Image (tube, rainbow, N blue to C red; front, side, top):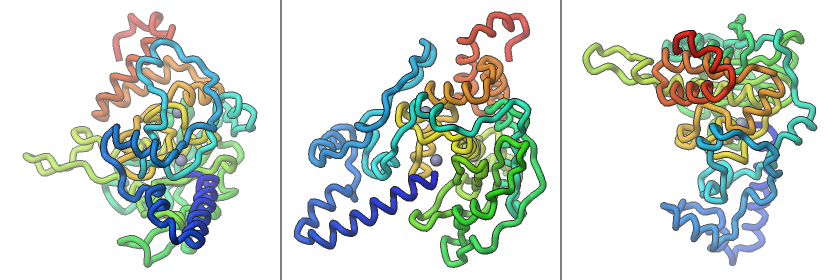
Length: 348
Ligand SMILES: [Zn+2]
Ligand SMILES: [Zn+2]
C-alpha cells in the first residue's frame, strides 16, 4: 500500500466520523453504506450497488493501450462488481494510472545496468522465512530483467516497533521507510528491505509491505505468508510441493518494487499483481503477473525483451512448483516473435 492511499484513508475515516456525529438519526443508512455485512453472491452485490449507488471506478482514466490477442484471452476488465464490501477498491478511492499518466508522472526510470538490491532488515530468524530470500532474489531478477543482489543487512529501526501490537509486536512500515530514506545507493535502480517481522501502518491492522513511489525504498514482510505443509510421509516441509508461501512472498515483493518504479494500484484489470489488497484472501485471489497495461508500463520503463522475460519466468516457475504460472508464462512467451527463433533450442 502506498502513502497516498493511506492519506486518503485518513480523509475517508474522518469524513465518516463527521457524518456519524451529525446524523445519529441516520445510523441505519450509514451502516448500510459502510456495508459491515458483505453480501454473498453476484446478485447480492448487484442489490448492494443499486441500493447504495456506490461506484468506485467511474472516475478512473481511460485505458489507452490495446493489447494483442494472447493478452485479451487471459485478462478481464475490472467492473463495479469488484468493489464489493471488504475489498480494497471498496475501501480506497484509487485515482488510477493509464500509460499516458504513468509516462507524464516522471516515473522512476531504471537503466539496464542498474541493479536491484534486496536487503534483510534485522536478522531473519525464522527458518521458513530465511529459505524464501534466495528464491525471491532470483524471481525479482527475472521479473524485472535486472541484476538483483542480496546485500548486507540493515538494522531494524527500534523506533518503529510497537511491542503492544499484534502477537509479537509490530513494526510501523511508515517509520521503517523514513529510516530507509536515502540509504539506496545512487547507482541502484531500487532497494527492497525484507523482514520476517509483522508490519502495520497506524490506521490498518497489518500490511504485507510498503513501497515508496519516488525514493527507491520499500519493505516487505514474510510474516503472514505461512509455511509449506508437512509431507505426510517424511514430515518435512517441502516448498516445491506446497509453493503457496513462496507465491505469496513473490507477489508482495514484486508489488512493492512495482510501486518503487512508480506503478500505481491497478484499476483496469481483475487480479493484476499491482492491485491493492485488503486481506490475504484478496491477495491469494490475485495472480503473480502483470496485466497487459502494467506490463506495457514496465516494458516501456525497463526496455526488456518480453519473450526472454516470460521464458525465464516459466523456467523459474517450473523449478519451484508454481505450475499454473509456468503454463501462463510459457504461453505468453510463445506469443512473442522471438519464440519462432528459439523453437529449435529445446523447450524450457
Ligand atoms: Zn500497493
Ligand atoms: Zn494491472
